[in-house]
Length: 324
Image (cartoon, rainbow, N blue to C red; front, side, top):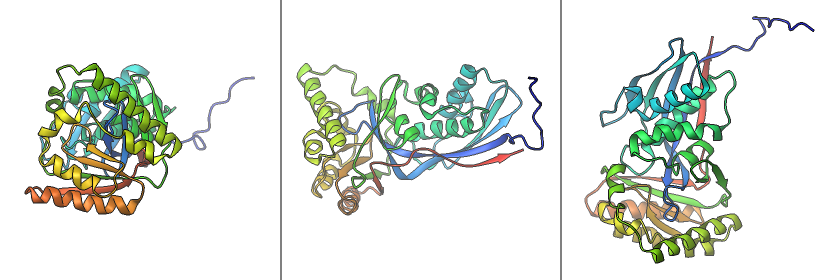
């Protein structure tokens, strides 16, 4: 049978532009350095991506950032991710990108990862055959490396899939968490660049510390699967990274204690800092904790922003598409 030509009047129209939002995240979650994170509702980066005929990627504008960010695609997390996507799929067309920053850079909330993921999700919506979210992970890692200097997915995974995600080198796995559990995340208005927060980890760790951290991670993962807060409370303690990074976060001990005083399952530094998070069984406890944590920063002379979100936070979302 001869294939019939598609009727242009009834064929699906090809989208020419799309925009997507990627939400903030808590990286590491205390015990899962570089491999565990969860998304956070309430803040995010937005990307508008347009399909263009030229076989290139252009960053045309970045809005809302207090820092000068590179427009050169290869030096920008969003641009590098889309360049990787083009190469891997052998695309003949290119992309034009406009970024709207809603997450502060150097905040420990995944600011560089969010632009990368938002751009990828928007560009994916423009493909004739969009890829599954998990298939975007490698391109996102290529983008994130531009900002952090390393390939780690603790922010990227939860932004792509939503919720609590285990992000290994090659795989993303969303983990079950009770819907009632919430996170309080407080961001002081200071900047701590990821590269700087990683330098304090250059020296090795004692084997006993690594074993203790592995045990804590296992308790947290098992507790989440079972919905067992007792196991999470026992395990949500960072014995490796937090002791070295704590001096980089102003008033950290005071803010962490404020989080723990409101019946937290645990509290620690979000990502590379300086944001601080706590986990709670009830939203009401998280809201009270967020107020107390912000007050602790204020007592040290720092303004801050507070977010309260389900640990099962949102995945990156396509907001709309424009078609020919």
